[in-house]
Amino acid sequence: MVVIAVFTGVAGSGKSSLIASYYRWLKKKLVTRVAIVNLDPGAEVLQYKPVFDIRELFTLEDVMKKYNLGPNGAFIKAAELVGESLETILSRRPFDDVSKWDIVLVDTPGQLEAFILRPAGSKVLSELSRLANTVIVYLIDSSAIDNLIDAITLWLLGFLIQVKTGLDVVPVISKSDIARNIEALKALVDKRFSVRELEPLLAIRGLAADLLSDFMSLLDKTQGAFRAVAVSAVTGEGLEDLHFLVHEAFCGCGDLT
Image (cartoon, rainbow, N blue to C red; front, top):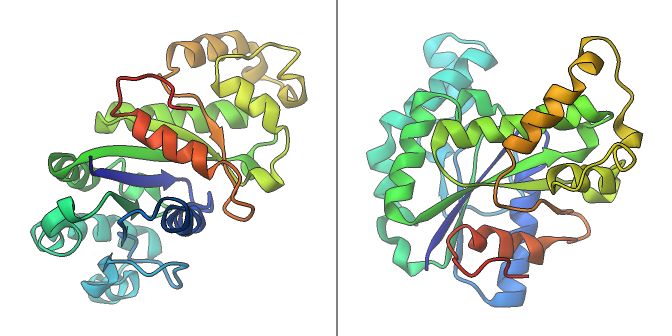
């Protein structure tokens, strides 16, 4: 069974680092036929060698110069260009014959609103899902969370990605080696939350505090079928759990761990 795992998350959530670490784990532990695809035209330095790199077609700097755009506008235009170049992209390795691979890891721009949440991104994901089982790996950046509202905001963004794309989204708490309140975060997304467990994250006030019960109710309603795993690209923690989680999306056998 070929799996295409599309990694996304807010800027700085550690997508590229995690992909590189996961790639090394797959090659070492499972001797897996794995390919990496980079769809981020703004990447300057990659920690891995992609089988296909969108920068072979254009870079963010190219787009800025050609269309006289700033960085933000260029990312939006670049997403459109990815959609327009889809036929070319799909004619290149690894997409020309995905059966040659066990898993394809796709790196996406940090500006996810300029790709995942736009029509061009949806078009790309739709075409990928026609080629093989496709799942979105959504990184929740633990280092960016200081309180409960931060956690809820990032969690709901992942839920909106699932609504927008129609694909399964598996939650991954990234940077576990430097996370604060990691157990409370895992309790939050694993439906094990209680006021006591979340106490370290309850430093909120104002309207957010008034709406806390509504937030918690919405959070409960938007919980998916997948538990969250904590991973670290630095220490390798959670990579095996991540692997099982990615494949659970297409397995009727329940929790593979």
